[in-house]
Length: 440
Image 1 (cartoon, rainbow, N blue to C red):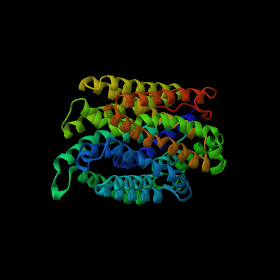
Image 2 (image 1 turned 135 degrees about the horizontal axis):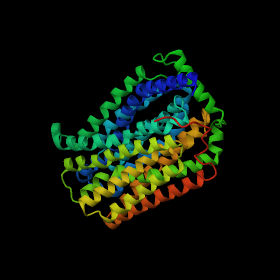
Image 3 (image 1 turned 180 degrees about the horizontal axis):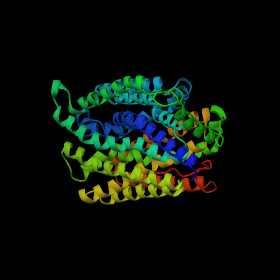
Image 4 (image 1 turned 90 degrees about the vertical axis):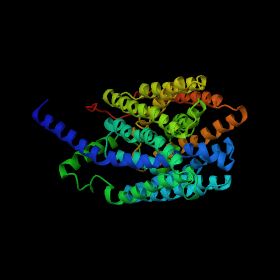
């Protein structure tokens, strides 16, 4: 390597370290509070169903109807973000969903429960695909799996933090000011979203050019890397994204993976309780174990994928591990130890598929097509967030057990793995442009 090449490589590594430290911890915080507000209903269930006399099916519909509102407003929200910039739009999303999440304390009937969950989905629509799109402005494909993994470990951390926190709030605040523990949980966990939303306004930059914390050579380094990659991407506008068969295939794959994700997210506390752990605080503490291991698995799998440039088999192996874990958790559902091992494997596999998956559509879409395509993939995929809890709840009402539902979720993950193989068979690593593997 010549002296000029060595200097260029050193500059690039320094630039991306600076960008990672500036953006990822803050975006990570945003996603922690977002995801916690989305799935804390799984903990509320432990008290709320008995207090309000809701059936498992009512819970499943309420948990899942969030994703109908999410689906309807996802694409328009992401296009608005692309046109207006991330700063104002992400702030708007976070503030509105924090307020609605706190209002969940008033969900005292099935109808009000459904309406509030639906509104929460509308409020949050565009957040996750907006962040994925935002990261494509800063990071080329060769670095993206690790960066997305760092961002998405927020899902795991929200479980590590959210489980014990939710259990503690529901136990410690029960009866204070005449409110149930689950009502206090919604209020106290909704407030951080509003606070962080206002911080977004002063912290995020809409583009690389507007980043005052980067020097001009640093900005140009990033802009040049992204510009080289954009030549290999398609940008046919919103209509082109809807007509692109690759986008719909990616949406199908993501649907299968999200079926497994929300099977774990909405039912993990109940599965641990059913295995023989009765105290709410103990359930909360135990949920931290699978999520903690999943955070480690996400980072290691994504670093391996970026280092080798291989996406296909990394994604498939993670999905198969998640399917095996769900199947085993169904078989060992009455044994706390074996159930925790199986649920940990399931959570590690399922969560590891997500950052790996998002290297696929972001490698082939650019411009407005990326904004619409990423949002379309995410919104269609997240319809599984409605199907999954509703299906498991309905099966549990009919059979008295969630076992059959877990097997269905395992089959969905396997279908996602097979579709991934089909989607990438002719393209190696999902049509990424020519690249030099980034150093770890």
